[in-house]
Length: 264
Image (cartoon, rainbow, N blue to C red):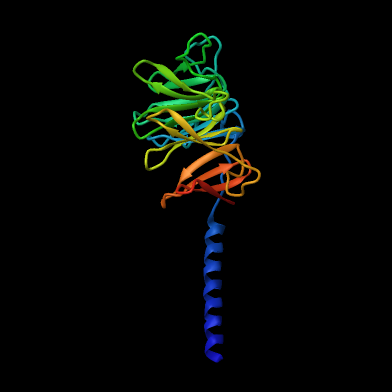
């Protein structure tokens, strides 16, 4: 009995030492607030990116902000300058393998020329089927082959850098193999090279590149192993190969063998 009590005491003592150590480290942490007073153009920050040069980029409701650790450089839409940002509401950011910065706005996709400090805009044109499918650019993703994918309020787009054109993938009513919803919130490629597309209201989609078809994973009220919600905000694969899906109705882990979900 005495031996067991001693073991319990030692375990308790060890836990107390670990807890005190963690608290001591937490006390050293300091949160620095960077806001309007420091030069940030607007306080609603929708996206953040650190580029290969260590610079921080912040997409806000009032322009694109470049931060070098000391000062901000702000880029905004200027109606009198066609080489300025197409819109000052920045929703998404991506740096490709060439080091090119791509900016998704409320009115088109923009490519940034770092040397000149200018932008090239790509917008939706109803008369051109190879233009961007929608102007609200919700997500930008470059896959392992260097292909740039753009999610808009009008569908998924694959960008041809050489031709400067877009291939659209959109929802087609009555076609279960089409994209489930045209509002593409998130795009992700897993380690096997499979492209996953999260939508606002249509659930999760797995893209078959060879056949250019989609397999839908959606919420089913009577099925507890289905996706917990059809609004998919984020997708990520962990180091063990588990695919996690963040939705408006909780976190989900996909069982790829059975195509079922565990909800959290």
